Amino acid sequence: MDQAQKEIELYDSNNTIRSVRPFGLMDKVGYLLGDFGGSLFFILVNSYLMVYYTDILHISAATVGILFLVANIWNAFADVLWGRFIDSRRNKKHGTFILWIFRMSFPLVIVGMLMFVMIPGMPDGFYVAWAVAMYILWGTLYSTVNIPYGSMASVITNDPVERTSLSTWRTMGSSLAALIISVGGPLILFDNNIASADRFLLTAVMFGFLSLASIIVCVKLSTERIIVPKMEKKKGDFKRTARGLVKNKSLIWMLVVSLIFMATMLMIGVVNVYLFKDYFGTTIALSMFGFIQTATVFIVVPIINQAVTRFGKKEIGSVGLLIAGVTYLFLYLLPDVSVPLFILLTAVGMLGINLFNIITWAFVTDVTDYHEYITGKREDGTVYSIYSFSRKIGQALAGGLAGIAITAVGYDATRGTQSQDVLDGIYSLATLAPGIMFLLGFLALAIFYPLNKKRTNQLADDLAKNRRENK
Image (cartoon, rainbow, N blue to C red; front, side, top):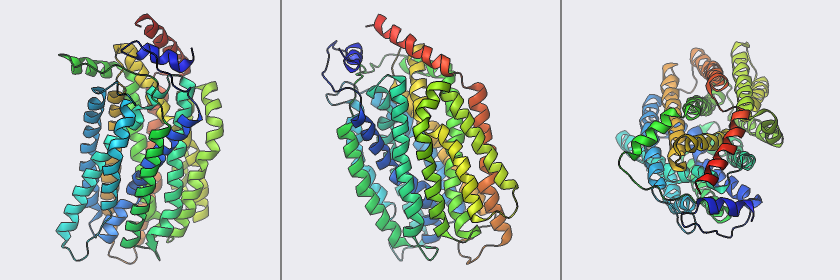
């Protein structure tokens, strides 16, 4: 009996064994394409939607920041609600998570396209209302696809090494999407450094079809091997889950690190557009920046599995965040940084960032395992949605604070040229702020996160023993 069959016998509520193919390349490619499809719009929205709203719809950056803050706080709660909903619906013939990924991808893509539709000649109030409605709806629909997609990793395999592999392939998927957007975005979306409404819409339509095709292939190639029984609702059930979550120190500290990391990365993405467009005066250089930054992912990928196997996820991730923090603070302290030097040094920082980011999804499966260990309940959707909650709060803070901060330094989209004080403020937002935040993330992970290499390996053994005994 192969490993996949053993897992299914252990978890199938009917005590039956399904014949499925072993974990392999198809699962990895499918998981890669899932994040590639989802990230196309996610990165486009988080990198360029604020510029679309400020420079095309002429909504103030502060107003956009408040929209991002409020909408993403709602989306964070939507993640948790959807995660609980998913956990209450198990044992589907073709897989619980796969089913919902497929169903909800269609409305998600349609609304994503509508988000970049501009109807000429409408009053300012209409554009604000359209932005609010479309962004909140898109974010809610994104939860309905992303929560089952992220949760699915825990049921594709229970092997720690294979889960790290899935996390690596997932990161490659999002990195490929980032490569397309970071390199092509500045060239496609802007005409002589000016944002173009027609180009934004055309890009959204193209990305929409490509995103949908990628998600469908993900569904076709992925296999849910671990069949977890449907979560039966009992009186006090949510309280028991909540107590387990509170006791899960690994989850709590990973939420803290994730919130800091997500807020920092998304703020970098937003501010860098203004940095290159206004401070350096070239969106073409932003394209080169995006290529080099994304290419660092593929430098780290060949070594990450061996590094994690030897040193552990916590250890490698901590070093990565430390490198990133030191690099950005060094950039802030350097006088008169040129475009080539800025790109070169941030590439070093990005190498550190990717040491953490590539394995972040493997952290999620570890804290999900720990939740099962301390509660006896397997709640992939709930735990993943709580993790996603922290990322959405980070996203809310990034969008809100970035918009407010850009306004606070004096940015005015109606001006042809920004003052030197405004430009210096933008540079500080792009360097000093992420430097401090990455160092905070390093301290939280290195000092407080409990699942080091030894404890993670012991956890896998303890769970396997518990599952055999409870069979």
